Length: 179
Image (cartoon, rainbow, N blue to C red; front, side, top):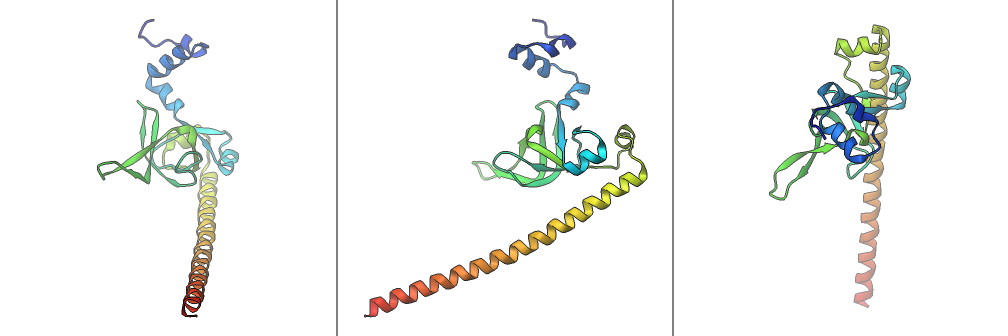
């Protein structure tokens, strides 16, 4: 096999040729390989189900050990086809912190970086639609924060209840021991 990239490799059934296609692909296609699915709200607004990820987008993790967490895209690695999110780190064996690399198929975009004019032109967003998306995203984040505040209070109440139950158990054990 030759090392030069060929468009005809795209349709091969052989896994080795598919891997070679991805390995030797030019950068304009690598960007498409790093497309991430959109949330339901954004699918309706953008008119597509996935979009290439960019630095500044907010993504939610759908699968894996970090499922349910979200962060903004810090870096997009075009050579290894990985996406790095801010605030999501793991500890190495030597004790240092390192960013976690995510496969784009395990992510979902929740909020888009709409400051890039080329991105706006490509998806034909008018200023009104752009503002509507920003307002709706802001309302969603506000409602999530309010609901998470309620969860924190519930957790604190349940912790207090469990502490009281433990105190009662220890008191009853002491009384039995005294008898």
